[in-house]
Amino acid sequence: MIPRYVLTGGPGTGKSTLLDDLNGKGMGSVGEVAEFVINGEMIRDGDVLPWKNVLAFQKRVLELQLEWEGYMNDESHFVLQDRGVPDGIAYCRVGGIETPPELTEAAKRTNYSGVFLVDPLPELENNEVRREDPEKQLELHRAVREVYTELGYTPIPIPAMSRHLRAKLVLDRILAWPITPRCGGMDNNYIGAAPC
Image (cartoon, rainbow, N blue to C red):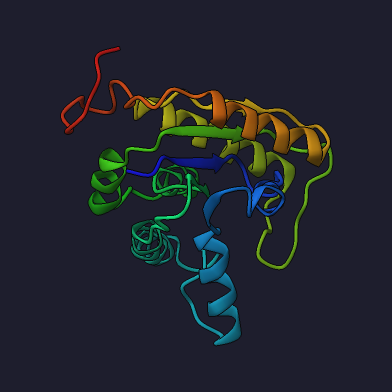
């Protein structure tokens, strides 16, 4: 199995930039599904958008996230992806909606080799698809960390620093990381659960 690592955190923290900076260093990559869905919906003037229909949006993101995570490049030493399945739970919580059961179950089945929590930058990077104000960005950042922790992961913080240093920190950590399953989880009842 090829090790899979997740870059996560609040919106506009530089995850996509970090993924771009690391791309091509013997790794496969998975871009951000949510941004892909938003861009597609905006082009076709659709309603499956987080500011119009959070539930439908999260269900569509989950569907595509699972599909994209299913693609593996056998020539890659590892895979690095922009967000993981559990991010959707954080967005549901902050959006004030009940997490769909299929999202909860899919999150419990994840088995990422590691999770990097990309800390907010001093300046919020917003664009047409990222509309959160700084308070919402931080709320989402905290919620994402909480969800991954509940699932038994120990997110490694990537502080706000230069792009080069962020990329070096992630790559150095991946190369030094022993490949072990996560421990615990929301209910400890999944294949491969390790004791904490």
